[in-house]
Length: 353
Image 1 (tube, rainbow, N blue to C red):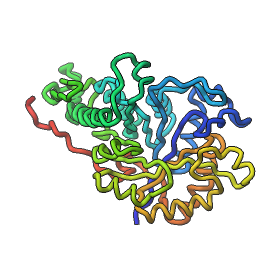
Image 2 (cartoon, one colour):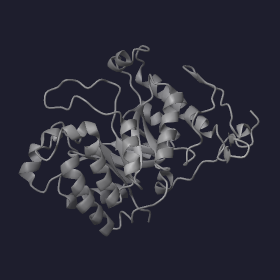
Image 3 (cartoon, rainbow, N blue to C red):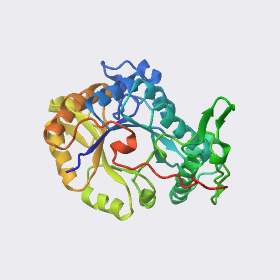
């Protein structure tokens, strides 16, 4: 029996809009990154495999009771990397409107500074608001943005391969830090962009940092076969949706559910808006076991409050899942090895171009 993959989402003070207003939260800690760091360190200590970081291109709206500001997900993951040792770090990166070359270089850099624990959660944007914020081009329909995202994933992996693993030679007597013969052009063209390469960043420790996406539409499902990790939001129709991802050739499948872990039913109802699960850890552990029987490879928990729910996940849920033999001991090594993924071969090794 293989153990489930466990992960949590970092999103402001938590997934619930009012999470930042609780007496246990210092709202200023949201924008210093301290709230996120504390949550990730708690999750790491409990043996959680990876943390994702929410982000979007659209400027936060000034809506009463909601946090109308956020940190850049990739920058936040880089802030947390040196303060953690084992947990995977997977920031959301919207690849629509952004430069693929710079995106892949940033993800490769995160893999280097985290010693092989980086991934990226590929997202798209078809909104007019996001296009206006960037100011580069008009919005496209969802299907077109996902087609382009697949090209971005493809060229990113090519650019990660543009340096052979042994291209860095550090030959002090000759003064040569790299062997230029082991660095290659990718010469990639898509309908919307072209990249010649090579990358400015050497091949990442994992070869290819883990690529993930969230399947919440038929267009996103078409891209599932290109990634290592698929997040399925919501707790309904689990078996059918997992089967659809498998049919599309998708990698590891994590059910992504928002959770409010509250034994006190009355208190829980007060902060229950929009949650997939409201209740105690015993019932959530039962549900996770049922979902595992339907074919998922793991769970992606989106806590209502980082300060209230992550400690419960770490101190009560993970031990209970371990007791039920659903989760094993904390897994060492790279993020790819945690997910049971092999390190990809370099497509350009030995190439003369």
